[in-house]
Every structure is written in structure tokens, then in C-alpha cells.
Amino acid sequence: MTLDIFNPQISVLSHDLSGKTLLVYGSNRVGKTKQLTRLPKPYYLAFEAGINAIAGVPFLNMRKWSDFVSFVKQATNEKNREAFKERFQTIILDEASIMGRLCAEFVCEKHGEDSIKSGNKGFGLWKEYSDEFEKWITLLSSIGLTIAFIAHEGTRTFTDEDGEEYTKIYPHGDKRMKYCPACW
Image (cartoon, rainbow, N blue to C red; front, side, top):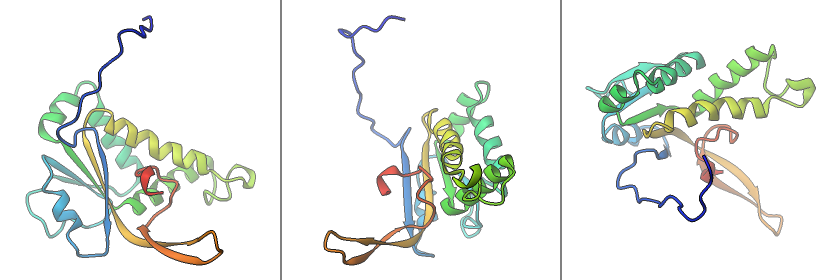
């Protein structure tokens, strides 16, 4: 296919959240899960037990990273994709830092290391970890689903230009997880 610079694609404004990735974070028991289950056609991936007080929401328990990878492969498989999208539009991932921990454990096991930090002869497996996480999130969002992450509230300390430290509220979890680049 030849690139035709005189016939570009025209962008279209999305009128819903299809293909978008969201992050909702806050303290415990403020209704993060309840609000996200109100999005169209939710499917809840339970990395923690946050759905146990809400009835009627389809869900799967995610106990290891390979469970999530298997889910993404099935949902995005060419044979299943359209039927899956007819039934489900929003994928809720609860909770982001647990997802990150499971992904890190998977990467460590794959590379025969005890920790992300100790891998790659002491330089760490940070890129491998980030790439693994991003690979499956990107594939899942590529089929036009709304991806909604739930995270707990955490804090980070920063230093301003005058050398004064200050604290900001941030989503809890490893910043290398690229679920919400705008948050980092």
C-alpha cells in the first residue's frame, strides 16, 4: 500500500468511551466499583474481592497473570471478538497495583529472578515488566472496549524548585505500569 499524503484519514469524535482507558482511584468504600459497573455492558476482572457487594455483574477471578493473559487472548481472538463485543463493552480491572504485582511475579519467573530489581545482571527487568503489562492492555483496548482500572489512593513526595518537599495524592502502585500515562 502506498502512502497518499493528499488523502489522509479524517478524525472522528467519539461519542462514547469505546476504545478509551480510564483510571478511577480513591480510598476504600467510596463507590469506585459501583460507579464503574454502571458503565455499559460491564465485565469485572477481580484481582481482589471488590465485587462481592454488587449483584448481577459478570466477573472472573484473576489469581495469576496468566489468567489475565488467557482472558485477553480469548476476548480478542478473531473467532470470539465480535460476539464478545456484543455482550461486553466495559472491562473493569480491580485492582491495578495487584495486577502490577502479578505481572512482576510473572516476569521474574520467566527470567528466573527473585525480583524485578535483581534481574538483568542488576540493571533490573523494568522494561520487560512495563512491556509485558502494556502488551496485554494494548491488545485488549485495540478491539474498541472501554478499559477501566480501579486503584487505591496513595501518595508521592516531590520536591519543588526551591527544594521544599510536598506530597500529592496519586494512585497506589508502580508508576511503570502504563495504564494511565497522564497520571505519572
